[in-house]
Image 1 (spheres, rainbow, N blue to C red):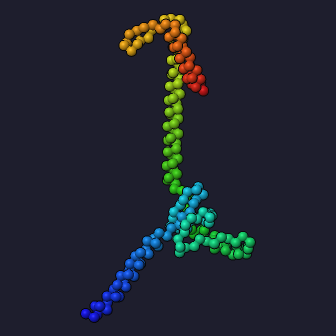
Image 2: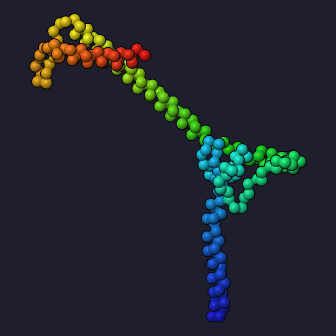
Image 3: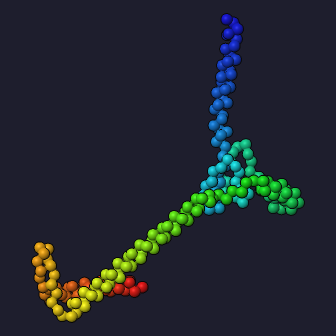
Length: 186
C-alpha cells in the first residue's frame, strides 16, 4: 500500500506537467507574422514578410523569431560585410507577392463582365431614347399638319382634342423632343 501512495505524488506531478505542456501548445501554434503589404492590405503568415516590407509595416511577429536588423547607415564596411548574408537570405526566401494570381484574374474577369453589362444597358437606353425621339417627332408632325386628332378615353370611347388640349399635347411633345432627341444625337 505504501508503494502506491509513493507513486501518487509523482503521477500528480506528471499530470500537471502534461497539462502545462498542453496549455502552451496553442501559444506556440499562434506564432504568426502580420504586416501591411504595399497595397495597404493586412497579410497574415507563418513565414516572415518579404525583404521589401519596411519594418514599420510589420505589425506582429512571433516571440521566438526576430526580424533581421536594419542596415547600419553610417558604417559602409559593416553594410558590405552583412550584404552577402542578407542577399543569401533574401534569395533563399520564397518570393511572396501578397497577391493571388487566380484572385486577380477573377477580379479582372468580373470587372470586364460588369463593363460589358453596363455598355449593353447604355446601348439599350440609347435605343429607347432614339425611339422616343422618333415617335415624338412623328406625333408633332401630325399636330402641326392641322388635322383633327382623336384620342381614346378610359372607357374606350373616342373623342377629339380641342385647342387647349392640342396646345398641351404639343408642349409635351416638344419637351420629349428636346430631351430625347438631343441625347440621341450625342
